[in-house]
Image (tube, rainbow, N blue to C red):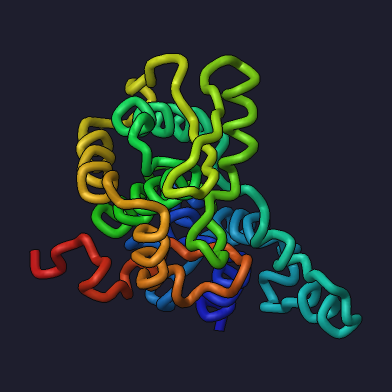
Length: 257
């Protein structure tokens, strides 16, 4: 069935329902109807989906996943889909938001001795994934991979190196409980006009208030209890949709409302 094929391709490409819906310029509930077989596709939508999933329209129309099957049979080390999973898929327009959110975090707590690079990784992760759970929208929309220390934003190094080069950040090294840690300090104020609305700022402040005093070990252990990290494969991206399967330990949404 086509709707099942669409769902399979979306998951293989590690794309969220929200993202695909935005590409089709429809709401997420409307897209869910497509995946459940309750709504038919238009030709234009079908062509767009084929493009998003990286398959030809003919293979999409006939529900053939030939590219993936051929790659596996030939024993290649990476399939097309596996390569796509590791791509930096944060929307280009939100690179700027990533910068401003990072600068804002640093302006609030960057000077605290516990706030090194690992703590920043986890704060960005919970800002992104908690927001998605509460509002079913992306705030930054960064890509986080699973590693031993918890979720790590793929885009961090590229963006931070660019900010240091442009004189927006400085990097220093300090000792925290006899451990060497990388710290970043802001050179300029954050531009909060890059945020969509006051709700995003309130959410960021709430995460900082709740988690900003924890050290790297505490935040790493906390992130290891979060469903998106638990269900992800090592060194693979965490799926935003997994927040809807969180346990009460890490869930931030009141589902009774």
